Amino acid sequence: MGEIRVGTCSWTDKALVASGWYPTGSRDAEGRLRHYAAQFPVAEVDSTYYGLPSTRNSLLWADRTPDGFRFDVKAFSLLTGHPTRSQALPADLRPAFVRERGAGVEPGLLDEVWQRYSAALEPLRAAGRLGTLVFQFPARLVPGRPAEEFLRRCRERAAGWPVAVEFRHPGWWREEQANTTAALLADLDAAAVAVDMVRTLPTSVPPVVRVTRPDLALVRLHGRNSAWGAGTKEERFRHTYTTEELREWVPRIRRMAEQADEVHVLFNNCCGDAAVRAAESMRHLLGSHRVAACD
Image (cartoon, rainbow, N blue to C red; front, side, top):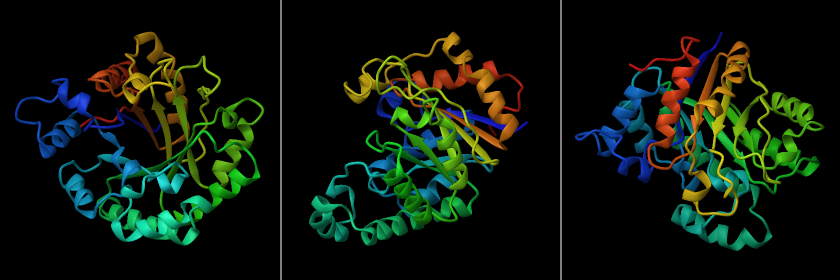
């Protein structure tokens, strides 16, 4: 049975900081991370989707967390084909990005972005704190040959790094496509991300569980708000998981742990303290099934 690690998709979310979950005296950057890492053994780094990481932050994150703690790090938006503001890039890369944006981003620029992204995360990997890189692809990436070729280029660029893939287009995990998708990710040596979200929309990704790497499997729980895809960020992710909703995932997570060395269960319903409370509840529901403890 693999180890199950439960945590959240951010420890710095403004709504979490304002909720009062962090005790007095632990509300600066260092105090927040040290407190979070004393409660949970894994966290997702969301800020690296919006801008490139820094070596300094990687060193600080490693220093402020205990041995065995894991960070799952989101891939930068440009690397996954999402719309990206030129201001999100280093100043010296912005002119080339602006010139190329209308015709598509050149591989050379993507290669340079990847080199800076990965170099900044190297201290985190060297310290044994890196869980995986999370490549979340936009809904416009639909199953088919062009998408497969794009995925292969992404994986080649990230050769040697642990990678997990989350699809936002539901077609990847519909019944008629699911086996093909799982086989593709296994061939790419990429972990499949299982998703929980509202299930009543045309864009809803089904809660399919597939383990495509023997060392790691991921679950990301986004909440079940029907404003998904239409509302503000706060509206899309505002959801308080009920015990019954969490229980649906317990047997799935245990099956994943039978096939993978580690399972990371990350809550993304980041409004107030909803995510940390859901993570605490999930850990309780999983009981003694090799749920990682905190130092």
